[in-house]
Length: 324
Image (cartoon, rainbow, N blue to C red; front, top):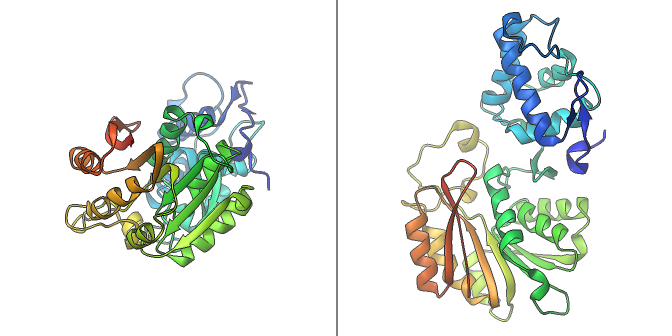
């Protein structure tokens, strides 16, 4: 089974339009919307003509958007993997959806055992957080703000990922910077087992070291290590927040919740992470949309300068980065 989402190959609709992965995402969503509306919903392009089973498409839309909580990007990757490249979408392309058990609130990624991050497949287990599209913004920030070529070091840029989970952040950065080496830190040995498998899958296993333990304690115990980039998507959900069931029932609590205000990990990690930064190194963090002021002040108190709060694609404050 080929992985077109990984390769970025282009496909074609029945009308001959060339599609990249983003184009396929839009095409699939347009397709479902049109089909769920019935034959009167045809947009006139002729690509969807001849199919009137609106009930089936409404069911497909419900499964993808609600029951399995599949994101547009991961859905496009999954459809790509199931060989819709090179022809128009048809009802047969959705047959694989019906093969999964009717598990209430189960994300599709949990049923198949893997999710998608930056267009690449990452295997998951019960101890790993399901990668979110918001976290892809951390990769964009590192790549946009840091000229890693200017850093010194025999092994090239040194990257630390605190709370690495499936390893997706660190692995993506190691793929982007072939001379980089990195350390992934997590409290869960089971999560690191999966991160190691993902590192082998993506060809970076020789350049990464995994460390298990309480993140704050390991940071204290590794004061001799310095890193050019430290990145983290820490737990930041307040303990009293009622998360959607597709999250609460399937993602590990330790990767989600962080005290009454969701700031416990920032309080215990930021100062320690800043002390692990090499000269001119940067720290890049994901955060809750309403935590910007608090995280900004924690970074400021820890000694970072040039601190920036940046939004995600929905316009919500989602990232903070700063440098020494």
